[in-house]
Length: 212
Ligand code: B12
Image (cartoon, rainbow, N blue to C red; front, side, top):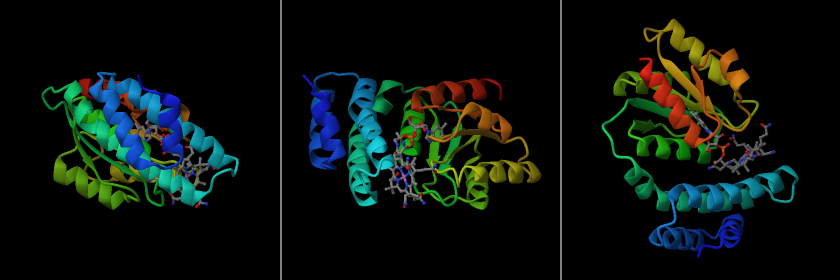
């Protein structure tokens, strides 16, 4: 039996080794990856997010917890890819936009998309239009995924979309996400899709690829 409250607590305290141990045990016991992810890891990050917001936790603690989250996600990764090994469905280039260093949600979206059969090139954080564009050309991207967690960096998504429109890749498709992003904002900046979380992002990608 997995004790999710305990896993949440270890994540909150940034105890990466413990997090990995419990995640691994749960997977060995045959608990579905999606359950471990949502109940164990994402739920733990949600508590952390609230406490960060209310100044109960500060950046150093959150960084340590974020590292534990990454270790947990890495332990899940091979199982995510196992879930759905189909032919490559399309090429996605993904990154967090310029000025923004948050990457946990973006990493999750990358992993889930890869697991769902997409060829994913994850550029990392702090990505400019030029970097997205170069990668789009190099990897022959079908879709660009952009993540932003700060209200100050989300407008840069529109800059990227506008610059693509002026480039020789005017028909590039975009999917956007991140905590401050919603469907209205995505529509407003001309994105083709909005992903509220990693699972729904896969559905959005499938829909966009069906229209290509
Ligand atoms: C962890 C964290 C950090 C860590 C980041 C570590 C890392 N490697 O990512 C550290 C400590 C470095 C950090 C720094 C800062 N942070 Co911070 N951080 C967070 C926190 C607590 C959690 C974010 C997270 O990982 N969530 C878990 C993941 C799984 O969720 P998610 O990112 O939303 O992703 C999901 C969806 O949004 C979606 N999604 C995400 N990306 C994409 C992309 C695509 C293409 C799609 C389709 C979907 C999608 O799917 C994901 C999976 O389900 C949030 C609080 C919050 N509630 O979001 C604050 C938060 C985002 N941070 C905040 C702030 C202010 C900062 C700092 C400015 C703090 C400071 N004073 O220095 C710096 C900025 C640094 C920078 N330049 O980026 C604010 C932003 C406020 C605002 N209105 O802009 C928040 C909201 C906290 C708060 N309430 O005050 N932070």
